[in-house]
Length: 533
Image 1 (tube, rainbow, N blue to C red):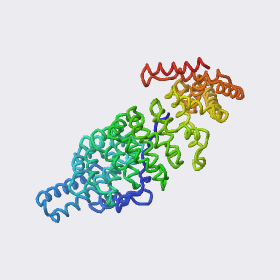
Image 2 (image 1 turned 30 degrees about the vertical axis):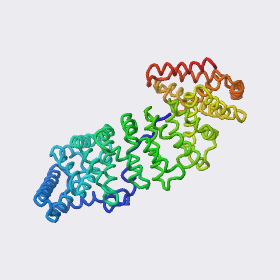
Image 3 (image 1 turned 180 degrees about the horizontal axis):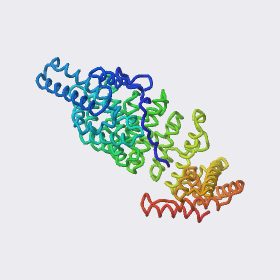
Image 4 (image 1 turned 180 degrees about the vertical axis):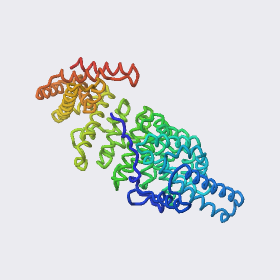
């Protein structure tokens, strides 16, 4: 079983269109407000070169407008017309600060001038429009295009991000989300920009992924957002941010599980059990939701929650409906059943074997056959992992008998298919081994661990799982199965020794990630197959 998908940073010009009158131009992802800020700064005082003097000038003007606005609001709290002009001027100064995104080398000076606390405080400004301006500014200042490939820029942006975090920017960004209404196009854009800013902060400082969940109610907000039935750009982005927060973070996976997150993601996915997404963006969102589900299924306690929420049944329904999420449902089942026997038992009880083995035999929806070869390969690998989990999780009784009988029915066709896959993956691993041997002859240093990892990437792990399934079949003492396996090995000029060799390599490389006792137990099981063969 692989890890869920790794997320690459969304490029600015990949941003889905959000109803907006200001932020994103349709052409090439250019931020018009940024260009306007540059033009205005040139007009208002002839600022042309971005240097320390310019920075001080910009900051001074901003602080002055901020002070004027605060004074006017305190003096005339119930007379908006008395402070409206100062608000417009403050808005203009915040817009002018956007030019700093073109000079990240000045960020340490911006921090030293103590401007960051003032900006962050404005996220709580009584006028939501001012808070929206600040969100847009922070998004521009922290964008990955600002960092580029320059190490100095990276250091400068990190200093800004650290200062933002020290001044509670995360808390205020998320609190501000609660007061924004998606009925207003500009505020809908601000929600999108807030998510983008949080993604930027994680990109610069990965620890933010856990910090933001610890300090704020972002996870709860995201759960609420993905449960909304209608699809739009913000729902898509919410699903993506949720997947980013969950990947590689057991703490966030457990935290979301405790917030009823498994059930929430299942509800969001259930909308597609009998229909397909209507656009590529909606399809991407559905994939994000399944990535969230697979991440959530890493901790054991969330597998239990998945079972209680009838996740196994939902995934089988999705497979039977043969809609867009067909492959993703197989992937989720693979995660749910790995090292978790109760899910394997439920799978057999709700008649999942028929659906899974139809897919294993290549009977996948016609629409999926047109997909790339890599898609079909991933399906095969997931199904092999799923069947290996079934054998590992169901050790005795009538369920075990039902599982074994699948390999006898229809003239042992499942064993034929298993050996067909065995040969294909065996050939791949052999080709990769020969390639690595040639590299060593050319004096290229490849240590044993690297060599083993390259073979795993070439398909060795799937080959090992097929060998494990063959071990289970052989150890069942079923004469017909044994005869079929021996016949097929002979036809392919192989012997049981070849299968034993693969099992031995698997045995020798079992890690102790789950503790020394679990390692010993797993090795003993494989040793049993080696002896039986």
